[in-house]
Amino acid sequence: MSDIVQVTDAEFDSAVLGSDKPVLLDFWAPWCGPCRMMEPVLQEIADEHGDKVVVSKLNVDENPTTAQKFDVLSIPTLLVFADGQVVKKLVGAMPKKKLIEELAAWIG
Amino acid sequence: MENIDIAIIGAGPAGLTAALYASRARAKTVVFEQGIPGGQIVTTDWIENYPGFPKGLSGQELGDLMLAQAEEYGAEVRPFTPVEKIEGAGLDFIVTADGEQYLAKTVILATGAVPRKLNVPGETEFTGRGVSWCATCDGALFKDKIVAVVGGGDAAIEEALFLTKFVEKVYVIHRRDELRATKCIQERCFDNPKIEMKWSRVVSEIKGEDNKVVGVGLAATNDDEDEYVLVDGVFIFVGIDPANELVKNMVDFDEIGYLKIDHDGRTSWPGLFAAGDITDSELKQVITAAAKGASAAFEALKMVDEKVCSI
Picture 1 (cartoon, rainbow over the protein chains, first blue to last red):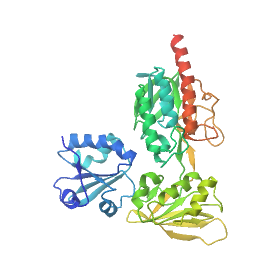
Picture 2 (cartoon, rainbow over the protein chains, first blue to last red):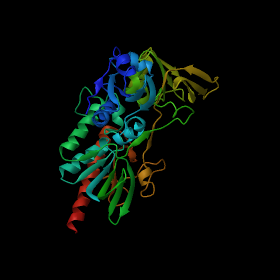
Picture 3 (spheres, chains in turn yellow, purple):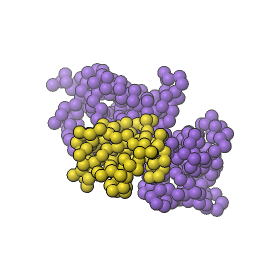
Picture 4 (tube, rainbow over the protein chains, first blue to last red):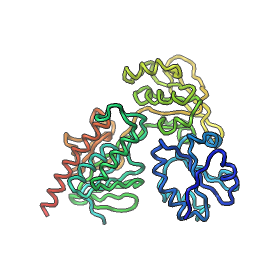
């Protein structure tokens, strides 16, 4: 059982690149409907797999630097970071079952 | 197997309105949605021609309201539950969705239409990486960048105008030398200094580097030279195609693939109704989709009652 961590441009390096555990980072915005559909899915991933992966969110309106740095050109985009590197990029909303499959290498 | 009175396929305005009418009549109503509820309006920035909202409202908001209203009366809306098969079973139907089978007395098909692809190199590869079908969703991520909008109808020009809020420049790429868009929208387009028209051009290729779009190849449809334009994004609005795969071998279509229905939403298969953008109705708008959804639900309800009474 873990909470979803809100990350800003300022905290990005320490919270994501410097994390001991892999980080699932959700790029979202309040005006994005599909992003809202992903909220309960991400909460469940945090609840069920929070021991293996840190689930985080980054608001692209308030934190454009990080979004641009990783070429986020559609939201929701989910990036998985491990040891400071992007190891997976997932674009678009998806059901929990599909997301779990995509994350199997880190939460399986 | 779960029993359903009215199985509705698709949670856009047609499906959600059908669900509202069906659930208020106390029919067991399930709406199967392959993705996210709301339909095509979810990707529409602003809707100004749905009555009751004099200042307009966002497509997302209208979709949310329609969903809430259907659920208020007991309709079950199941997102991310794609229907894989519809089969006749006597007078009923077996609907297979996300691997589960359901027995439905009637089916309302409201699967709508999907944006047409250009079918050029790079289009699929760079989707979500600069190629987009939704300016409303992705436009804000192209702040101060240069983008291309492909198409010449209302949707294309409205989205181009919306994008000018964020981007430095929009090229509108259109195969002909005049627009199809409504005159009032055309005027706004030509008055906007951020929009440059690329008349008589079609996209031949979308180029990318480092996993994102860097430019588009344009082929001339007149005697001009072909050209290459540097862009960071390509927004495609070249029309829609009916999502008719589920019933391909069951019902009658018009010559371009839209389902033929009568005034009350009946298809050629008894008990199978249709509404919204998948049908051959001329006007494809939120208001007509909603109206046809109500008609189809009304007829489906009559059939459900007849089936219950004849047992």
